[in-house]
Image (tube, rainbow, N blue to C red; front, top):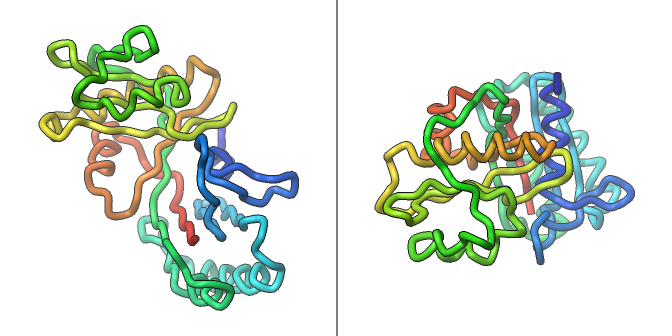
Length: 232
């Protein structure tokens, strides 16, 4: 069985590309931008700490020390990590541009599809018109892509927004007029099984204040395996 600490490592490696030293380089998407300068993933089994390749050794040591002090306070996993100590350190090297606080989830095989969905390929990609048309360019790069249709139009989809051979990160969208009907959880269910069929593990990341995404996980009755903090 994959441990929570191993899941966190798979999570960070799916989110960002890494160099030979294990340092983050870029967002793991076609033409992805620079990775954040710092990543901290907390689980009940330990933490995963990563830096962008250009963060100097002095800053790294300061952040590692701050991390040790913070972890000694035994902060519950159902509370976000306090970003302030790390923001203050990084701000000396350059202004902090963005901070992400979130939760990470693993979708087990026991979460099975309960509604009819369709796998979107180039052959049937027109299903995405007109409600989810911006996803047309991503049909191949975000495989597998699964959609729920109403009147032969895709109204909700889930696909692999970022991925490695070992794990895929879900990207989900439901057309505005079709939200709050449970469609998001249905496409996530089907997508997860498609990811298993591809030989990988399905993961789902949620920004801390994203209530809609949290509602999807509640419907699936899936618990978080950890929290993550990214600072750019």
